[in-house]
Image (cartoon, rainbow, N blue to C red):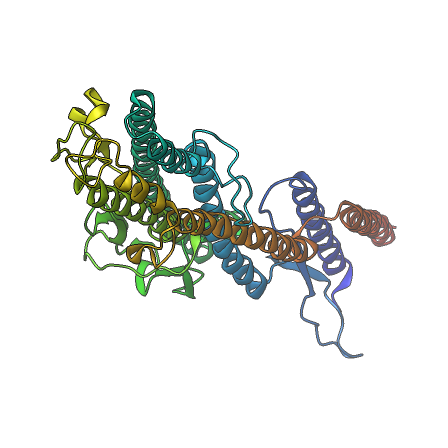
Length: 472
């Protein structure tokens, strides 16, 4: 039998065990509002029985470990969905910025559903309509100085708008490249943090301690990294987590094997590769890839469409106008200069002397309007280089592409918010701190501590009685 002294030791051990429970509960309550904190539980087990002549006799209980209440599967699901959310959020931000910055110049982007509504007199749609209308007015009065000046002024306004659209899209591309570089830098910092935490966690556990708070911090870093790019994790030595991105293992244990960097794939197309090995990475999620896809997808298509529109306009107007003669019989003055939206402009000679506009089909018929009519009829003519669409239809399709892409991004962000919220709710239900539950646990540990203390008091009295009996 363990006797009085053995029972006293058992009571003292029970006091320490219940105190551990109180401490763990206090830690949970202290972190009830801490982001990423996973609640902890104390694992209490019976200590080995002692064999006696009357059978096994219990020797009490001991706190064997402090465990986090987490689900690796649920954590991996959260990481995966964070990657998808990061992808669509970055697309949404890029496309919303494009819509906001370009709406004044593009017009027809009033809604995100892809519908084209021209509400701005300074937008490309209105400017193109204005140019063809001015050609019609010139056809009605081919020798009118005011009609000639109106054509030049309208053409200059249109060219300026094309230039502004191209400049805005180019600036947005530069901004997205800058954002890409910033995100890559943040990803590298997180990779370094994860590797350091791997080392600290293994060191703490090797020495017999716990690393629950470090595990919480690492999980938060993994989720934040997932927002930036899709990651794959595997279990390394001890409790370390290895991180792979785009098929390349970047973190192994406490070592950062490689990092990320941006590189110019040509024409300012910034992509991502490993810094040391120079391996180009194919990413499938996260804000980094979302930014790349928005830049090289919808926004590149938009800029290409606007450039093709300007290029076709330059070619067709020049082809018709250059073949004619001015009211005074002169020819050889090109209407538009440049090749696309970036450099389209009105010939400076023509701008200085609008009477040089070549509206006549013959050199001797000043009042002939045949060329002016051809210019006006371009408004309704299908253009091969625009997919056999008119200028207006092609423009509407180009702008609608931005609206449709933004609507898709908005829908995806909304859907992902719902999915992520659901997973985070499940994660919080499992790992979050419930104050009512913790208070109940606290009361249980308190009562058990009080009972153990009472046991110590009782044993103290019995030992005193025993000593008294021996000396009597």
